[in-house]
Length: 116
Image (cartoon, rainbow, N blue to C red):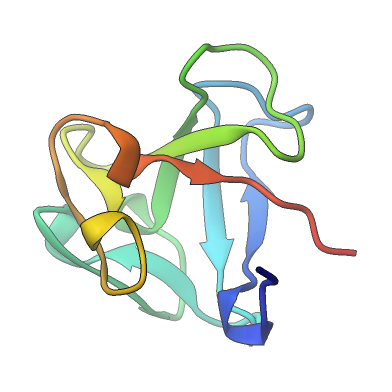
């Protein structure tokens, strides 16, 4: 499986590098202009329509076993503005991506890949 243009995002660390568990990030769509947003701060839809980054467009990166984050690691994303909400791939993938889970499991875990 490969990531295409619309499955590729830019992650910007806000707390410096290297990226570690607990760091805050913003994520922009492939157009480089739109940020991912937890609509309403969480509890529902994830969109890629925000023109600027605020607390609902900022996420906390968590690595299940903690520590530094490297290519190929599994990560979870939690909304910075309302820490109750995790990003989830509904059904484990192949459909909608939401920000509607208050605990993290397999549907809320993503593999971080770096694209040259």
